[in-house]
Amino acid sequence: GAGVSQSPRYKVAKRGQDVALRCDPISGHVSLFWYQQALGQGPEFLTYFQNEAQLDKSGLPSDRFFAERPEGSVSTLKIQRTQQEDSAVYLCASSFRLAGLETQYFGPGTRLLVL
Amino acid sequence: QKEVEQDPGPLSVPEGAIVSLNCTYSNSAFQYFMWYRQYSRKGPELLMYTYSSGNKEDGRFTAQVDKSSKYISLFIRDSQPSDSATYLCAMTRSGNTPLVFGKGTRLSVIA
Image 1 (tube, each protein chain N blue to C red):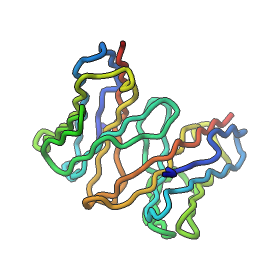
Image 2: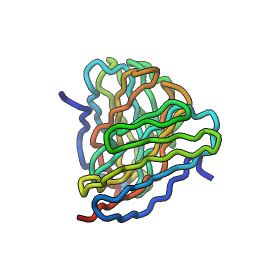
Image 3: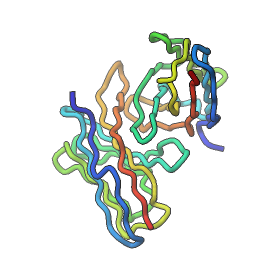
Image 4: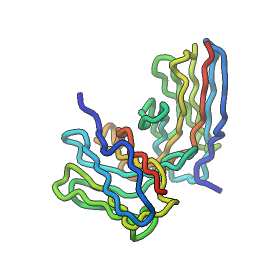
């Protein structure tokens, strides 16, 4: 079946440019997570949605980062006035509850390079 | 000190070897423990998850959790070149809280 999809797969932005990254979760998955993965590091949590409600945004590194999921399905992560330190892979995961655990399935990621 | 520590390797083994990967952690509130496999330029793929302490086996993979030592392991038996990837440990406090990942261990299985 269809997994989590993300677009674009690659994005090159000039410093100061705004970018929008899209995540299409697995159909029917209520929860959606965004993570940031720097080169050679593990993913780090950014934000979490349950349906359209953003329940946790404690991992967003600055107010330049904004995420939304207006209809409880597709989500968009927006980064305003991009900086070089924003260069990373942005991973989206959707999840369902299995034996008490929100089992997270990841998309392929969007690789962002800020020049 | 990071909440989850994982040796990044790289680790190189011959085909057929038993591979041992491990992570230590500092937060005693972690209850759910996972291992993800990540191929180059792909998203992480869930391999195993374990709740609290104990062992879990799935084919060639065995996950172990020792909460008293705050230490988790993944064993791969009869390793294959297709197992070459980065292995990430991850853990979380409860069923719907974000995952905290280790740095990942890069594994190469040489034919």
